[in-house]
Structures are given as C-alpha cells and as structure tokens.
Length: 221
Image 1 (cartoon, rainbow, N blue to C red):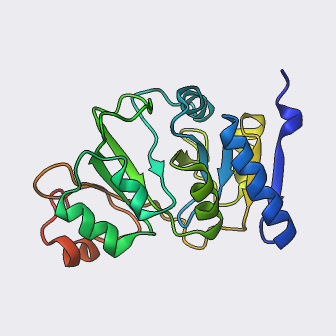
Image 2 (image 1 turned 90 degrees about the vertical axis):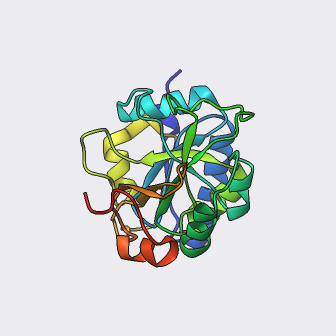
C-alpha cells in the first residue's frame, strides 16, 4: 500500500484549514496513523498510545528502539488520574503549578493500562502541552504517545514543514502552526521516589521547581 499519496499538510494559521486539519489528525490517530502536531516546545510526532503497532511505527519512524519509549501527552489534568497507580503530593503540586506547560513528569503507570509503549519499567512520562492545536487534538483522541518530530540524531523540528522534510511519508497528517516560539525541550522530573529527581533540564528551571516542591535531587549534577 502506498502511503506517500496520503501525506497532507494543513496550515492551522488559517481558520478553515485549521478545522479541517484537526479533524484529519483526529481521524488519522483513530485509524492508527502517525501525525505531526505543534506543541509549546517543539513539534511532536504522535500516535494513539493504546495502539501498540502505532507506537511501534512511531519508534520506527524516528529510528528508535523499545529502550527509548515515547512520552505520553494528555489533553487535561484529569486524564493523568486514570494513567497512574498513585499521585504523590509532589506530582500534584507540580501539575498544578506547570500544566499545561513545558514540564514532563515520570510516574508509576497503572498496571491495568492496555498499552505497550516499549521498555518502560512500569513508569510513564506524561505532559500536558500548552498549545491550542495540540490540546484540541488530544481532547478528542485521548492520550497520545508523542516524541519530538525528527529522526534520531537530527535537530528537532520547529515547523511542520521541517518535520515533513525529515519524516516524509511515514506521517499521514502534518499540522503547521508556524515556528515554535520557544523551542526548548520540556523539563523532565521523576516523581516516583520520595523526593523529585531532575532527569532533564529544560524550559522549567530548577529554581521554579524548588519554589513548588523544595529540594530536587539531581539538580546540581
């Protein structure tokens, strides 16, 4: 089957095209296809988190293996409660302070979840992005596995067109919303232990984290 004919790029800066693009992206995710969408950090390549073969296609498209499972994006804070076994107070405080926004938290996933994101060790990295296009898609699709829209080893895309140059026909729908205003990756914090641990420095600073949760392990390394 030749997928390249179905590749579509929609300019979401045009209201009419935005509506058509968002509908096309929602339909594509429902069919198990990959989509590229804007976020508040960089553009992401996404798949339905509950379709294991779609997640595998996402990893293959990027040139990654199962040892690098993708994070999950959600369209509301409440969605998080259904994905985790427990929500430590630090996790709730961080979500209240920085969601939607550029903070990814690593939590223990609920064992009942029917998904396969790769070799996760029972945890999942979750974020709620601060971008109207992404949120509109996510609220319709539910949780999506989303990684930066680039080939592994290449720079992250800051427009959908850049993403298409790298990913081409591997993705069926590209949503263009212009250049990312602040293309800095999200900060990643592990909240599965007694004290939050910084896994990746990013758009949310250590000082901002400390204002909310006090001490953060790994912040000085």
